[in-house]
Length: 174
Image (cartoon, rainbow, N blue to C red; front, top):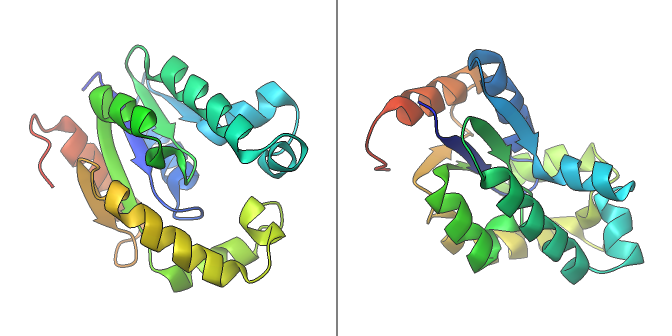
């Protein structure tokens, strides 16, 4: 293989979980969760960065972090939910790896998000409506990934197996 595997999708679609599972299956690959790297570098949670600085400030950090970690090979990169909206991020990610869109239904995402009080999405009124609006806005760009995986119908192991199989193939067809 040797190239990067990149996971994109809505908040709570499983990017970090699947990324960690892929890392367990791939020797010589490092899993990088972009949001976690930013939180560690900044010394605060994403929601605090949004509150203290701004979303624009966070998006700049995200862009710089993605650019840094896309250099080289053998990385599994889990992006933040909004990272693929930035055309520069999208171009970088599509160029330096095979990009997999982990697609989940709104109901599944909403259920998962409710269990995590630190997500910026939950700091707003009517998070479900915001989630629906984000999905409507972002879906078009997510579909630009090399592959789309419907995570509603597959187990974590099946998702990992699909990604491993496709990452090993030479073509990037959906």
